[in-house]
Image (tube, rainbow, N blue to C red; front, side):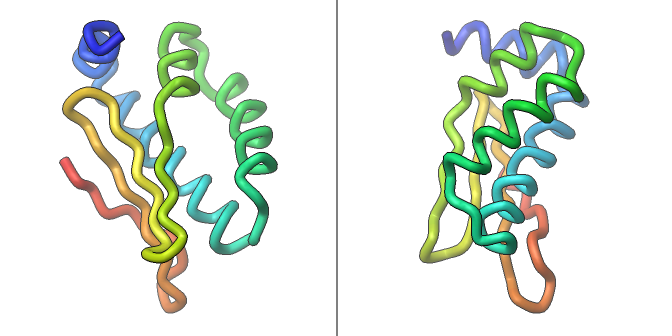
Length: 101
């Protein structure tokens, strides 16, 4: 699986960066702003990613990637291979991206 993710992160680098950022912001907004539960956010994400990304291999890789939600720090982190993106919720800014690498 990690070889598959390595291939995806190299082959679709720009798309992957955009999707990782959009995904972490989706979960950040869904959980910390809208106060919805993780299951509701997962359902909305599954519907939107299938419509937004036309490459089925990339879509499946994104759906299978673990999304880490830290309720205490109010942050969402998602990583594939060498790429990690974090969205952080702050009252004054809402959800914003904080790239890890």
